[in-house]
Length: 176
Image (cartoon, rainbow, N blue to C red; front, top):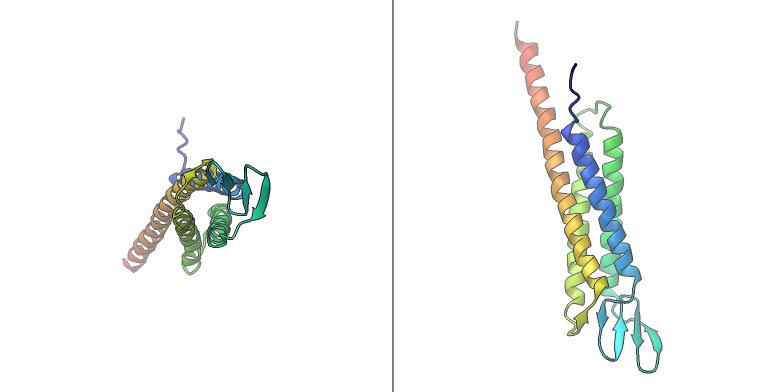
């Protein structure tokens, strides 16, 4: 009875998809809530600033962290889509000219992570106590960074296997 070994590329693709879905969920929760900072007088998020004594909410003037977070979220969604698409067509034999397109996953996850970091850094110059929404973005950054690292490893493994199989087939063809 032959044992069935799972392919490492399938396992890594599932890990990337799981980490990316977790990061997307945490970013959406972080962006949509108003608990980025909390002081005695106010509570603020990326979109609203609420005073607690006379309860009144205003639109936030901090647009840069919100725009950077949305850009990071969009890039991470693109990375998830690219990972899913290339996982689906992994079973089909792709020509080597199509392989560089699969680097979209690595670059979009990497740049999405970069924008999430810049968003949290631009927001962190405020001297207040950070709340759970801010920390959700930090955890989402860690998940997306791990997904980008695993995606780059997977992409390097794919390209190494393709180049190795091409080299071996060329050597096999040249022999008399």
